Each structure stands twice: as C-alpha cells, then as structure tokens.
Length: 140
Image (cartoon, rainbow, N blue to C red):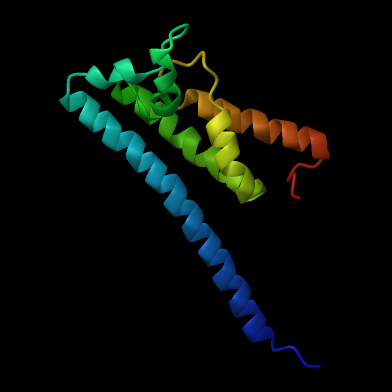
C-alpha cells in the first residue's frame, strides 16, 4: 500500500488551520464581547458595573454570569485582554474540551468585575496540569 505524502500533508495542514481558526474565533469573539460591553458601559456612565458580583447577596449572584465581561476602566480591559488571549489559547492547546469548564469555573466569587478571575483560573489550570502530568507541554 502506497501513501501519498502530499495528500497526507495537505490534510494535516487543513486540520491545523481549521483548529486555529476555531480557536481564534472563540477567543477573538469573547474578547470582542469584553470590549463591546466596555464601550456600552462607558456610554451608559458605568451603570452596568452594578451587574458585577455582590458578595453575600442573592441578587449579587447574577454577577457570576456578567462579572467577567465588565471592566471599570480602559486600563482594566487592556490589562485583561492580552493574558486572556495568551492563557486562553494555551488552555485550548492543552485540550479544547477543557476550555469551557475552566472558563466557567475559573472565576472565583471574590473578583467583583473583570476577567482576572478567569485569567488566574487558566493559569492555575495550566500549572496544575503541567505538574500533574510532569510534562512541560502537558499534552494528553
């Protein structure tokens, strides 16, 4: 049986390109939402910030859904953008199946607004999986 190396190579490149496009779409789309919410919040005079996590209140639980998308200042959203992209992509490279659970459960309740909790969740996940698998790449 003879293998056509050009066909196998093209299929592998297409597969990698498809995966990278999907990852860029997910991360870029989420980042676009961060920035869109920041612009809308700025136009509304910061009134959306009340949708952040409010500790020890039932109504404050809605912040679990919204807090990661809310940023108080331009510096805040810029400071969260780069680590979100870098660490989010590393989580996706590790295993795409882990991205959603790590994103959803990575934000602790102590962070009132911003994506910092998600970013630190990504970092903790990557460090833990690297330590647990005893591998720099921590591939499955």
